[in-house]
Length: 420
Image 1 (cartoon, one colour):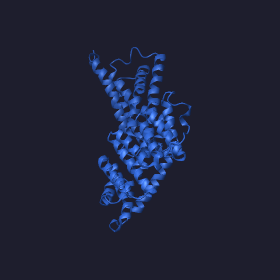
Image 2 (tube, rainbow, N blue to C red):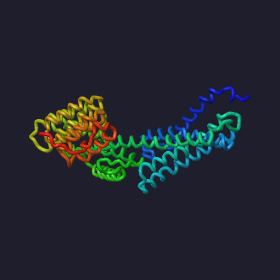
Image 3 (tube, rainbow, N blue to C red):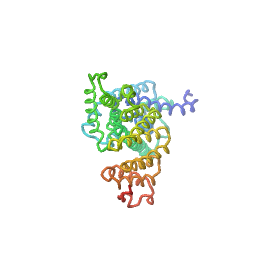
Image 4 (cartoon, one colour):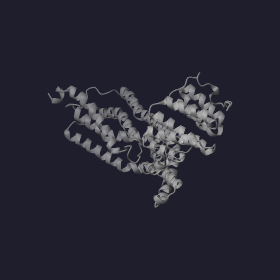
């Protein structure tokens, strides 16, 4: 009797471990890590999810092929399957950039790319699965009880759904969340950070607009803007800049993600100038130094409160309060964020629509739909032109996931403005 027959437990453990190793091999072959230029997969997490969910189909196909086609278990065949796997992986690695460029040229949408990602993972993993079957099935040439055609069809259909539909749903949800992050980065004028996210959204074929523009068009616009900024900053003699030009220069540096230089340039001015304090706070925020950022926003707010009323004063205070609320959320203090927005409602009635909208977004992300609806409707009622499109998009999301009693027919209708 063979060694294989004496070690069924070993094979029971070895097969799933070997299958999971195929995901690692596919991940290395595709190479779509978050720190690398975006590929068809965009994010490494998409690549991993896609690879893991393609495994059931690949394992099922490999098992069925091994049994139906009388594929051999000889060591030489294992080597052949492994060599085929390496060759396919090398070929996909070579054609992937050109394939992505072709899809961009054809303006292919999200789901065509999702199908292609699934096909690539299956092509990468199936030869490895055949090698595993050839190496671990046993000394017999084929299984004595292969799946019937009907059973195989049922399992194959389920595996196809798992391999294609589930990764697509995951990637679509990830695009929605990353679109929000890209929009927030643009609001804070973090152009390089926004471009990184938008490039990945474009790579996976997201059709969700970022601040009214599709990722592909916005990526080109941002790349052009960043190149222009780099050109403008080249050759500037920082030592000869006056205070205002130094702040403008530091702001451009922050947009380009050169935060250390921007912070060093603007920090000496932050205690006396509100615009410098706001910029320093934004730079510290980019560096995830939440408490220091909030302290600088508080300094800016204090300076602005003592300034005469003006549009600049209002805009600066709005930026400071938004920044403090954002930092509070990042530190796991949602109640502080709510208090900050409510402070804005009381202190800046001219910006009430903005703070109602921010409260609506905050409560929506926190899973409080009733409060979100109330504030979003107030924002639209106070400033339809400014907030109707954005608020309606969130309200539709709430309608899709809320009981009918919560969102009735009047959920999207405008309300009478609140008394100012």
